[in-house]
Length: 181
Ligand SMILES: [Zn+2]
View 1 (cartoon, rainbow, N blue to C red):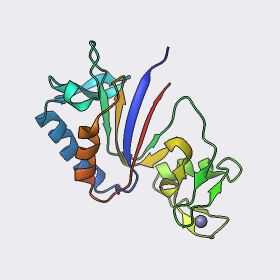
View 2: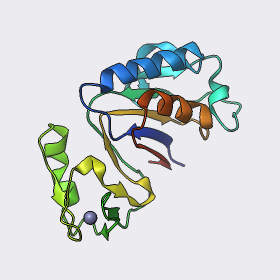
View 3: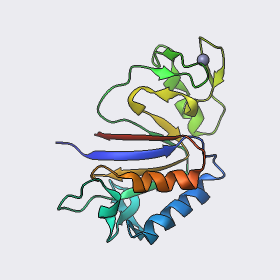
């Protein structure tokens, strides 16, 4: 057993633009009746979130007979993390070099990043200074992002939600993960 989740995070959204982008995403999902328009306390695995709308099944590959959980729409810095499973490497976005994130203390920068303090790590290969949100993670285990959607106990999302987020986010890099607690 376990609780399944899926998230989509926009690792390029700035702190300033994230709330506006989140508002557009939320209203479009509500217009399509995939989500209910009102935020409900505790709906998203204990956090405030949106409940499914009457046409939620449009958003998934294969609907199940029971309804899905809530959805948290996040517009401030958040650690989107992988749940069960492991990561073996983080990859430099500049040169593609893969390193051991633990040996290089990459996660030591999380608290600073959450506070919007610059916390870059140097790539040992190309010497580039890489902000925490720009590293790519094995199996997309982490995303450090100011914008994202966190779905609790939904069947596999189809293309609608990802296309909608991509449309709103423009050329930003999106990271998607499905896993369980
Ligand atoms: Zn590099």
